[in-house]
Length: 363
Image 1 (cartoon, rainbow, N blue to C red):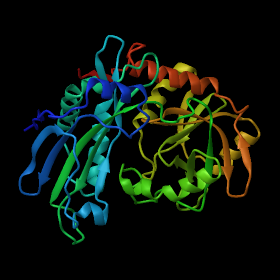
Image 2: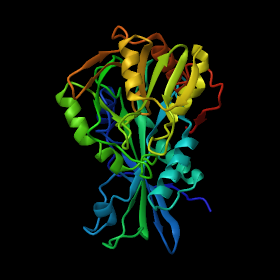
Image 3: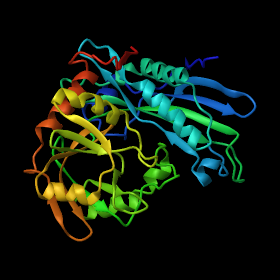
Image 4: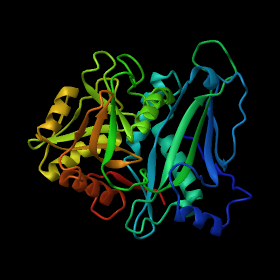
């Protein structure tokens, strides 16, 4: 039986003036809408107590399992306002399926695809005034579904009491600098995930393990970190929060999924869109030496990263622990990077025809 996310209105919502001030300069992930969706799962009763309620802090027991064993997963997707004022989701079913896969890997209960989508529809309809008008830009409503072990129990086992929630945050561009090539720090000292681990799941531990390397990157004027494989440190995997691509000899190449790389929804979409740019999409093992040598001899002409939050971000430079620098092409945004980015955004925001059936109207 599907869950019902009945709406319990916030008695003290932000005023139109307060909301508009936030929407004028939303930043990313710092301001949230008036409501959130919630549901509870127990081993005895399954999923129940679902609703849209006023946004508020959770009350957790100090022994809650999430605080001790990090048994939690999350997703990230967006709601887009189209020129006629309607609101749409982009491939949200894929996020729902990945959420199930992540939950399964972390020993959490799976939330049905229809319930995942139902929570989003109910929350976005309740807070539809928070979905920004992109005005030709990239502003959207970022959606963060998450699930965590809320049982108060210090034994090491899968929790018998789990909380699901969905919060929403109006979002501008992910990188404050805008669509400009970013610098990437290469680390072979730290690993994001290893074989048999949780790299293919979207869980907090994967991101926590990247933060020390991210701090190192920031000290070296880099925006993100490129991780090599945990075994040999010889193969390219992904950035701390994005998949990576490069253009070479008419091919658009990205590392093959190995179980330690997150299967991105944006990644999957780019594989489909590549042909529109006259590129042949290739998923295979990519040696770190191959990437750097290709940049140095200019056989690799463009490199970019992708993810829900940042969409497609051009990469103009790599740096590593040895002090070496590698400039991609002429350091500017490449034509394939710019074209793919624009094609994806135009579909998401309703500025181009959705020939793939990727969009779902929810309001």
